[in-house]
Amino acid sequence: MYDREHRFPMEETMNAARLEYTEKGVMHMAARRCDLIMIGTSGAVLALNTKFSLPEQFYLDVPDAKISRVGCLMMRVYANNTVQVRFLSMMPQKDIDRIFVYSTHPKHRNKLLDLRA
Image (tube, rainbow, N blue to C red; front, side):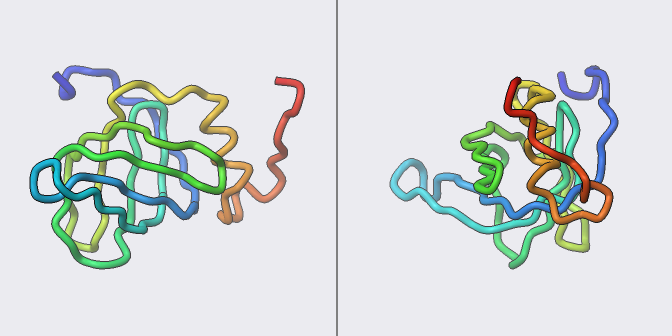
C-alpha cells in the first residue's frame, strides 16, 4: 500500500522528539528519545540516540511544537541509527510549519509562528 503512494518531498529540520510504543504486548508502555532530522507531509526521518528494538508501529511526539501522538509505521532502518517512517495520516502543513518554528536547524532560523491562523 505505501509503495504506491505519492512521495512528498522532505525538508531538513532538527527537533527533539519522543517515541511511544508498547512492550510485551499491551502490558507496558515505553517512551524513548530521538531527534527529528527530516520531515515531510507523509513521513519523517528520525535519528535514534541509543540502540534499541523498535516495533513496526509506534507514536511520535514533538513536545516543543506541542504535537502529540502521531501514528507512525517504520519503513527502513539504516546502519547509522536513523529510521525512515511513514505517518498513518498525512500531517497538515500547519503542524509542519510549527515544527519548523521550533527547529534548531540553521535553515529555519527566521521562521515565525502565525498567530492569526
